[in-house]
Image (cartoon, rainbow, N blue to C red; front, top):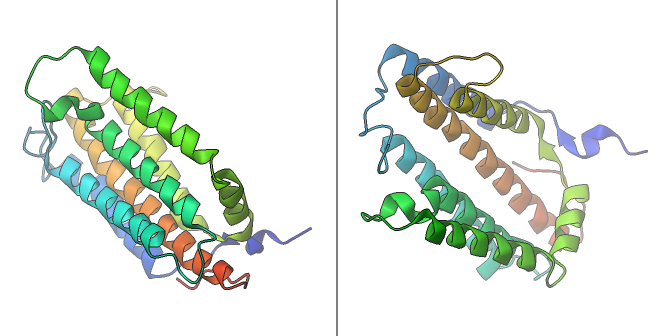
Length: 217
């Protein structure tokens, strides 16, 4: 039975320290009032500063996957996987802007925006099962080493943002402050996804050369 360290990277390096710093800022700044719950920072009917930071991280992730798809390293072995991951970034962006609802200044029925969501999700599902993408995803999953602390921090912050947003587990936060905490905590969540993406990208380059190499990042 293979060791767990074959699939999990427990090392604590610069990226982990950076994640801790961003997480600390996301948890500390809203309570001090340095990030106010105003429409400028937390968009209610539009996009706020925190939303734009999230979108910028999504953009970096999308470009990273796009480069891996357009310029496959050494072979096209993982090209389908990175092409499919582009849809994932588009879906995350769509969810952030409520499927376009907050980008248009009109009273279109929610039905049309729900149709956009359904179409994007269906296209992603179809793409996952075409051209062996699901096989590539599974092989990449079982051959890669995942940054343990990055995943732990990202999952904890994601759970925290959901708890604050929906006031679960007995957590009660004023509505304006809850919005700030939710948006702030989602920033390190997207950052963790970005770090995992770069880790997989780096490792897939090694796999394409025929070697089962550990994560050099």
